[in-house]
Image (cartoon, rainbow, N blue to C red; front, side):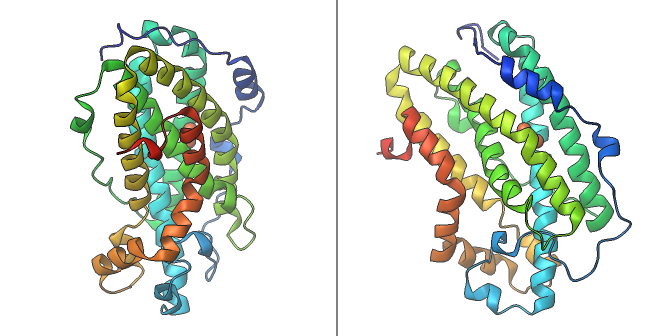
Length: 292
Ligand SMILES: [Fe+2]
Ligand SMILES: [Fe+2]
C-alpha cells in the first residue's frame, strides 16, 4: 500500500465517536433468537425481492414467493458478511498508517462494530437458513491499476461507502416492515442504526480523498466516476443470485436472472436504491455524467 504520497486525512469525528460510545451495545446478548421462524412469513420485504414489480413474481405460487423472500434474505445477509470481511481487511491494513492517524480512533469503533455485524448476520443465516451463500466474484482489482495511489485509496473507501449505502436502503426499509418476523426486523434495525454513523464517516473520508485526487490530477476524476458507476451496477447485480432462485424451487434460474435484471420495473427499482448515492456522487463532482 503506497500511502506515503497521500496527505494525512484529518476529519472532525468527535460527534460520531461520542455516538459510537453512547450507543454501544452487547450484540451477543442483544437479540432474542427464537428456535424457529413462524412459517408463512416473508423473511425479506416482498417489495425488495429481485422479482418485485414484474410478471415473474406474479407467476410464482405463494409458496415460491415466500421461499424467495427467505433465500433472498439469506443472500442479502451473506452479501453483508462477505462485504464486511472485505472492508475489514482494508481498514485493518490502514489503521496505523500515518495517513489515517487522525481517524484511527473512529476506525477502532468501525472495526469492532463490523465484526459484530458479521456475527449477527451469520447467526441468522446459519440458524434459520442452514447456510451462507458463497462470495460472488468481485469486480476485478486490476481495473484500477492505471490509477494513482491516491485515486486507488479513494476507490477503497468509495467501495466501502457504496456497499454500506446500498445495504442501508434495504435495512432502513425492513427495520419497520411489520410483515417480517421480529428477529429479521431487529437485525435490520440494529444494523441501520450503526450504519448511519459509518455512512456519515464514509462520506467525509470520500470527500477528503476526492479533493486530494482533484488537486493532484483532475484528469483522473472521470476514470474514478466510471469505476464507481461500474461498482454500483456490479453491487446491484449481486442481489440477483441464481442459487437463491434454485433454492426457492424456481426453474431456469440463470435465464430468470437475466430477464429480471433487464426488466424495466427492476431498472426503476435500481434507480430508487441508488438514488441517494448517485446524488451524493454527482454533488461531489464524480457522478456518472462525467463518463464519456
Ligand atoms: Fe455493518
Ligand atoms: Fe458499516
